[in-house]
Length: 131
Image (tube, rainbow, N blue to C red; front, top):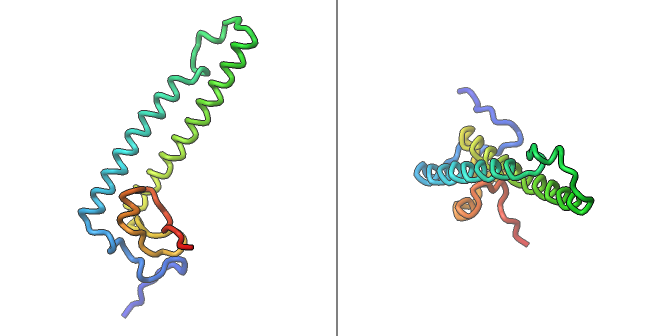
């Protein structure tokens, strides 16, 4: 009988997503796909609203106050855009884990993340730590 090889970082009880019934996993996947579509729309809107992309600003002779205000708008847009991109990356990582069969498992311990937690945050990668 051949032994099943498991990398040392993954406990044997974590083979597959047996803690998530297929219909639950499907609901969570749809939540992630919906979240991804909404975030992509937000990201597109942030890109459009960023003053850097306004071609009319290249030739303007704005006052220093207007330049400072524009700089704040640029920085705000970039910070918000980074937050949206980080959220998109977490959603994409969760979708990848679904495809790999490792979704819903704590990234450090390999223990199942409670379904209730996943419905609150389908991108969760860790169990809530108990004090």
